[in-house]
Amino acid sequence: MQHFPIFLDMAGARVVLSGGGEAALAKLRLLMKTEAALEVYAPAPTQDLVDLAAEGRITLVRRSLATGDVDGAKLFYAADEDSDEDARTAAIARAEGALVNIVDNLEDSGFITPAIVDRDPVTVAIGTEGAAPVLARAIKRDLEERLPPVLGLLAKVGKAFRPMAEKLPFGRARRDFWADYYFGAGPRAFEAEGAEGAEQALDALLETHLKRAARDGHVDFVGAGPGDPELLTLKARAALDKADVVIYDRLVAPEILELARREAVMIEAGKTGFGPATKQADINAMIVEHAQGGAQVVRLKSGDPTVFGRLDEELDAVTEAGISWRIVPGITAASAAVASIGQSLTKRERNSSVRFLTGHDVEGFADHDWRALARQGEVAAIYMGKRAARFVQGRMLMHGADPSTPVSFVENASRPDQRVAEATLATMTDVLAGADMHGPVLTFYGLAPRAAAAMADACEQEIAL
Ligand code: SAH
Picture 1 (cartoon, protein in one colour):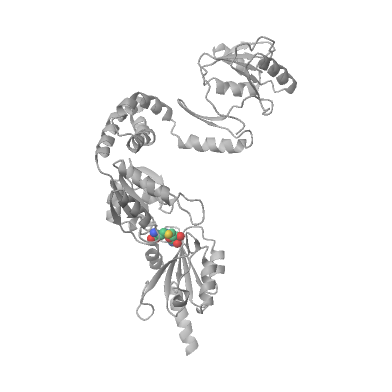
Picture 2: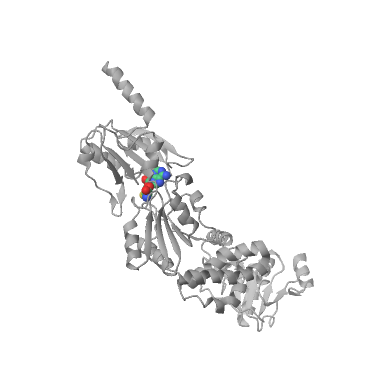
C-alpha cells in the first residue's frame, strides 16, 4: 500500500487551490462538502467560479499564486491543467508546508483524492493507487446503490440513541438491532414519515429486539423446493413468515425469498459448485450466532434440505450450541424434474430402486458403484452433474452400460424457464454442450421424456415386426 487512507479534520482548515477552469471546479465540488475555508487563485476564472465566490462558498483571488499564499494552509491543489504552472505552484506550496496534490499527476502528488461515497457522517473512500480508476468507479456505483441515501441521516439519529441500545446484550443482538435499523426499519420509517418517523422508529424497534434477545433462538432448516413458489410447503411458508433472519443458498429462487417476513434480515450464504464459496464453517458460525442472539433463524436450502445440502454439518453445529431446531422437508429437484418429463422415478418391472447421485463432492468428481448402475433398467438422478457429465459417461461405458441408455437433462425444473434436453449415454456430452444450459441441471440416467420414450418403444416394435 503506497497510499495510506486517513480522514482529515477539515473544520477550520484552510485549503488553497490554484486554477480557474474545469479541473479546479471538479475538485471544489468535492471540497465544498467539507467545512474547510477554500481559497482559489486564478487570473481568469470561469463564470462558475465567479458565481461560487459571489455565493460566498469560496474566496476568489484574481491573480496567479505567489510566494506566501499557501502559508498555513493544510492542503494545496495544483489545478491549472498546465504542467509548468502546476510545477511552479506546487513548489511554492511544498515550501510553505502544505500537503500537495497535482491534478492528473499521481507521481508528483503528496496525496490523492479517493472516489467518495458520501452518506455523511458515513463516508466511504475508494482508492486504487491510480491503477484502476474504472474499478474505483464501479465500486463506487455499487456502493451508491447498496447504501440507502438516507443512511447518513439514520447514522446521525442513531448516534444519539446509542446509550439506549446498550440495553441489548453486547454482540450479535446489538449488531442485529443496528443492521435492522440502518437497512430495514430506518429507511422504511423515513420513507413513510420522514426524518421524524425515522427517529421515532428507534423506540419500537428496540422494544422488538429486546423481546427477541430475551427469547431463545431457534433454527428451522427449510426446504425451498425447486423454484416454483407453489411447490413450497405450508410449513415452509409459515416458517418464512415468522423468521427474524433468513440465511439462504444461492439457488433459492428470488420469488421465494420475497415471501419472507418484510422485516427479516436476508443473508446469502452462496455456494457455487467449483466456484468461490462461503466456507461451511463460516455458515455454521453465522447460523449459531444469530440464534444465540435470540433470532428465529430460517436456514433456507433449495429443494429438500436433506439432499446434498450439507445439512448434517449445520445440524451438528446447532446441536452443539444447544439451540433448538427442526427440519422442514421440501420437494427435491429430482421430484420436480421427473414430473416435468412425465415419468416416474420407479416403475414396476423397470426399476425397483432409484439412486440420487452427486456429480461431484468436496474432493472433485464423485465415485459411485458404476458396475451396479450399468445394469439394464437402472435409474439415477444426478445432482450437480453438468461438469461431471463426461466423467459419468466414461465410467458408465467402461463398466459395460448400453450406449443407447436414455439420458435426460432438466434445467431450471419447475421454473418458468425450464428446459429439457434428451440424449443417450453415447450422446450425452454433445447434447449437453449444444444445449448451453446455465441454470441448475438435473440429469436423469435411464429415463427419457415420456413422449420420446413412447416413440422409441413404438419404433422398436415396428422393427421387431
Ligand atoms: N437440496 C437440493 C439439491 C442441492 S444440490 C435439492 O434437494 O434439490 C444442487 C443441485 O441440485 C444442482 O446442481 C442441480 O443439479 C440440482 N437442482 C436444484 N434445483 C434445481 C432445479 N430447479 N432444476 C434442476 N436441477 C436443480
